[in-house]
Length: 505
Image (tube, rainbow, N blue to C red; front, side):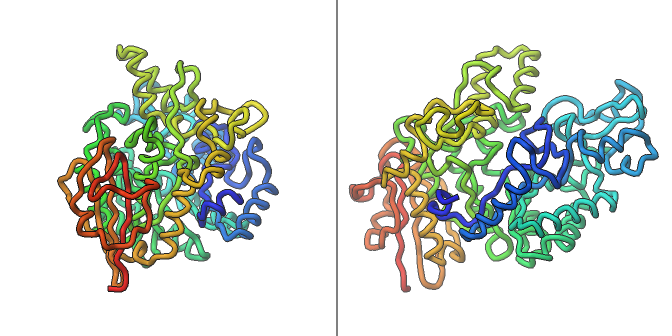
């Protein structure tokens, strides 16, 4: 907690800590109002709330309202009979074994329907077979969820991240999963009955969001959420029409235009979430940077590019250290259900194991899920016992202890960025303007308010690049840069980043 306070953050988003069979790393909740024993007790959670509050930090809880675990009490009751009061808490369809209600597939592979012979019915699951979808059409379900949220607010939660929230208004008979017709009706009711009754930060995960839809999610009137996670920029290095495992090189021109669109469309009408890493995504320094020779430079360049924008930045654990993807030798070393299912499916389709492993190295969710690297001690200082998942072998040189002892580390660069954002209102209110939109190597933009004009200029390559913009800004004040020594004229060195400002205009 003190480490995070030193970094300068204001909130901690916890991945699910509720009681769970851990089929999907806790996103399969069996009891919303209990803590998974391997993480601790409810008393530990209450202490966490209290210690965070002392430090001016709020705890954001990760909440899954689209589905539960199949071991949740509601679902165990729902399976007993069609007349059970909990049966309609989930989505069921009559049918015959082997003849699915339709051809919808789950996000984790295989049919989205699971047969229950005792009932002669299928239940719907957009994710794992152990994650049956809740029926949001049932007002009793909604009331149960609202009461649970209010209970956590009373406990001390300072906000919520709403997992796959754009999928709650599903209509499976019409094959509608994202952005169903009643979605915003449900979200406004959810906010009115819960979040608006306290001081909450809320963010909805919405893979299918467009800027126009995001305006509804993050309207300044607070009728739905504080902000939204959108993923358009994250999918730009995925081959169009293919699965996430099929990668292509990042097109910087497309990335710039995508982020500029979100910045400009939501300006004064909504609010962006700024992120490149999370528990579902590979490490960005390995993905869009250079995790070898220029790991520090590319990690800080990417941070500069993102943190200069309007919105709320999210820093995923270890990002502030420049943690990288991991490459385990065999599929047996991986834990992620999505990764394991993909490996099996692609083997059956005739892919070579080596080819599949390359996709896993690039895209597996387990890249982000290796334990936090606290020190160069055994298991990266994460535990003296047996870690639940292997630590990235590079922990001996990439860890928090090393970073805190090096004033030029990635950690201290993030600390400076965070401080800059808090001290200069232009980061919050400044209007965004993309510069050099067709340049394939430089990402540059300005932010302008009534007192300050700021240039963010970054080199996305491992080569020196000439940037004439820097000649125009040479009289400005350098707020931050990721190289220790001065630039050579208008040259940007490999993965160099700089923020320059004119103030008092």
